[in-house]
Length: 126
Length: 226
Image 1 (cartoon, chains in turn purple, green):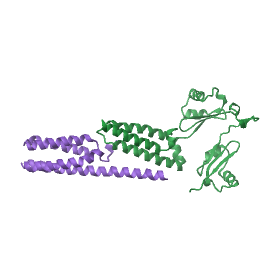
Image 2 (image 1 turned 45 degrees about the vertical axis):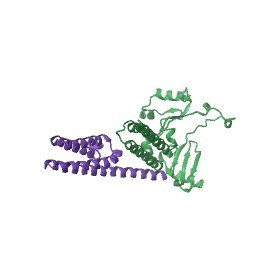
Image 3 (image 1 turned 60 degrees about the horizontal axis):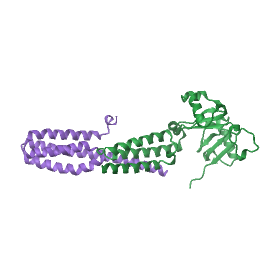
Image 4 (image 1 turned 90 degrees about the vertical axis):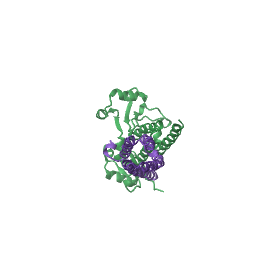
């Protein structure tokens, strides 16, 4: 009986962890997507300072949260986002705006990939 | 490099603890479900052990899930004979009273050569000296020779009997097993009557009841839970 209770507790903990990670990942990706959209809007309005500040804020926020997320999901995409964010930041600083947009689009694709990878769908299960 | 070292340590400890938590049976004989789990453990652990880009949790979660499943399934087996049979299979009598059960061998896709080979491995050169050969659910073959083929013990001095009798488990953990009783030509009513004679009020109060072909009874009543 004791063993069964422990087994049920382990199962419940695992399910809770899986759900929490899924929620955290989705929120993380959504938040980053919103920040990137603000940056793109600022670039389109030729407001480079605002784009730079917003991206700087996004980068520090990403660094904080990605450290937690790296415990739960594979690093590869997160590392690529980190590189793209620093690249985009450097491009804004040097006012290379036409090269900055593809970097944002790359980050957005990676974020979608992370968010999709954790979804409980038939495709992912299979 | 040091990351891999620490990861290996963690996974080793986790698997050692998980195997220990599964019980002592795990170390010796493996049932089909235990065999599958042991195989999976090694595969699941090796991947995050080597690939540092994969989180350690990708190895820990499946191992913990399998551990919990194994404990839950063994609890289910304890309570439900049908589930136990479904997953672990049942024992098969290949030789019964010296007669080869050809139907059972066909069902198990076991050739005569394989049976003879197994018997030889158990030190039985002549198939005619075997009274019972039972293929256990873990794949092990149990062999019982005719009485005169057995080595003598002190208790056998002066005796000349063929005393190998296959006991049938008629009641297991309070559950009456109809098929086994039928082999002995006994009904549930007769069993209940026999139990009452021995001071046991019902089948539910029996932990184990085995009866052999000479109607010798081995009875273990259920102990009261503390």
